[in-house]
Image (tube, rainbow, N blue to C red; front, side):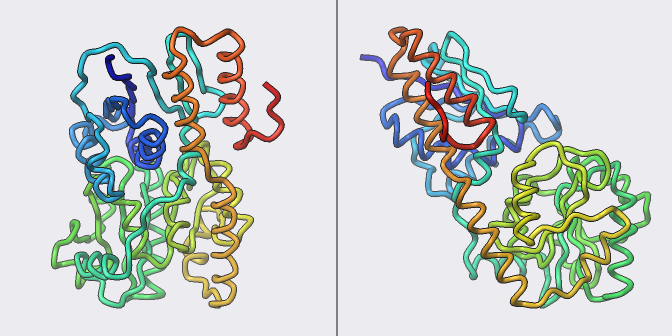
Length: 344
């Protein structure tokens, strides 16, 4: 009997970064199935050739390297289920041929392995940080570059020893940083010991870089933006400063703001919030509230994998009622983040 085959399309970096917890649960639900993952990056073609490498590294980091998945090497067979990921909760879909599109945001809450103290120390050494305080601008968009640099320079004037690490949303925006006259070290260059700015262009490392910062600034939020994932620094208990513009990750932004770990400011208030001294007790309370909030939103990977297992195991024998049940639970979860109140 031929093995069941699941096709997974991860066509942007944000989806690729959320695959490990989903793959873990999918492998538990369907241990014998072929999982064929196609990676890509329609948002940024410059990153397209590196997405499969990022996924392989992340699977290895999560000890899933031997999980039996195929990456960018389809076997050509028909899929029993085809999985994709959408950015908007109202864009989820369940089609007649086993096509199912999951909302990506709930997967961002899922537990994942974090860097330990030794790994964090090595990462700080890589960028020659010493004992300097670090502000990390995560996924800074080109349109907000001038505002970000102006606020970063204000921070440096008040604390000349501070390190500003910057990860660009699009690597080609480096020219905008150059045009602003910023003197920076590239990645782990030794010149980083003496410069205030370090520009990181390595792909797929932002989530781990948050482990070495003191304050995380969310990119793509200072003007009209999608909003970078704030859960990545929150997993490490980092203070988070954000603008007020975000289309994605709304549940995470509001929950982390309520916890006190994330502060939303207008662009001109960014430097003042970064420099604000937060008492240790206040920060610890915010970290505890944030951790409880994150834990309360977990479970998407298991839920998504369970729906895929129902589709694969049911195949063409799924009844109209069973299909309606799958679709009903999918749409309810995408809207509410839980199955409370589902009657189908």
